[in-house]
Length: 253
Image (cartoon, rainbow, N blue to C red; front, side, top):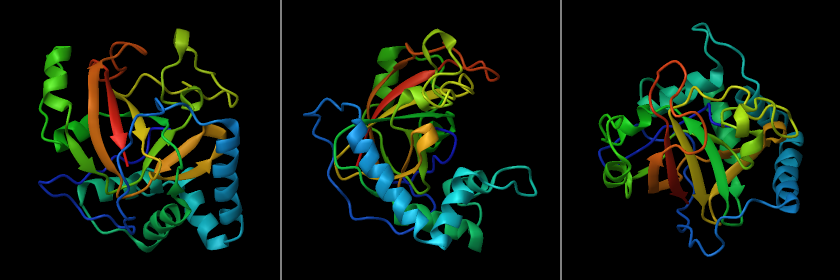
């Protein structure tokens, strides 16, 4: 995935997270080159989450509001309005939104290995990191401006453990029906930032939507940028905005 949530908390201060923050785990070591999850690992993580959700109707309702959200009066999904409120600190969550965030936090558990997760995002979070317009920068300037930046998210972040199933991730040849779900790349090309998250083994993740290989980073996850470049993965510019597309490598724990 890559459409929901990108709130952050930096040393300059942002809104406090709504859901409980887990104890800090340790950064990834990189010893395992962040290999993809095996089918057995995916089955175990998704199976545990699905069993937990099935056993608790209130938990199931909260997760459903995130994966299949109703539309609010402003035309946005409940998950979008809630994550935006957390990201910007613009307002408190209402009871339904808070229940959704609590449900995600309850389902999240340590991923258990160092692996790669994929997210496509808009570039507004770069401004909240204190980084100005990067569009005229060369790759060396990008690295100087971005590598080493750190933050902690104060809203959940949707990712995919398999880029082929991520609707927002560009696929080879511009394919818009990739993966087992035939949804990979289906809405790709409109995000300015492609992120590869490299997890520590203790990174807390909620595996809540198998059809899109969705893995949601829990509130309170630490982030550190380790690499930045203009894209080699898909279209050079995002549709609509016309901005150049940036690729980031980010450690999370």
